[in-house]
Image (cartoon, rainbow, N blue to C red; front, side, top):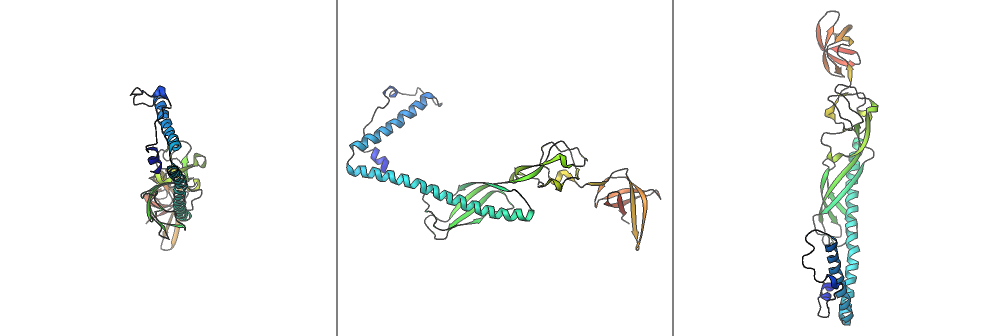
Length: 296
């Protein structure tokens, strides 16, 4: 305001810095061009000229006001920047600590956060906090946007404040390197990890290739697709038509007999098998590769 009053003072006079641009009218139109840029330079130059002329003609009191306004402007800019830096650092430390606990529980490695903070309170009039800023709020299981409250223990002017933070959590996740067909056993060379923002993954993900190597594909998987649990089947320990061993346990007596799998199956799954000794079809639970146990 001091600077504006100084410029608008009676001592200020117009200076036609670019006389050839004085008659501008609306020739430039609405689109930005060399013409509109020249117009901008013309206006800017006239403002500068007004300040210089006003300063030359001003009294010593008005010159002092000019310097006071200039010094206030110069010192307020770094103060505002320091407050925002304080806020950003406090939020990053709080959310990093929150997500580190989540990472430890799930055994995640290589996690990286990217934050974009939007104060919901005007911080231009905010006094710097002389102590550590206390941050509350945030949810490690509900990623993306976080609603936070920041407080200063000394209760200085403008505190506490509310901040909305968009949080991106980057983590190596497993993707396919090639097409994997339905029913196919997934091999290690068909997988790799890629850093991805897990806040945007809706169906879940795998963090390590060892988690799904040897398992089956429930449906066709595209190349470079993020692998989620709904795409993965248990490893097929028994294939349809395969000759198997059927184990029967009854009253403490165990017996085994040859059989044939009528369905494929993974560990713990119940499938139909044919007892080759009796010719009967029974249901049996898959124990391990090539071995089932009768369910009766």
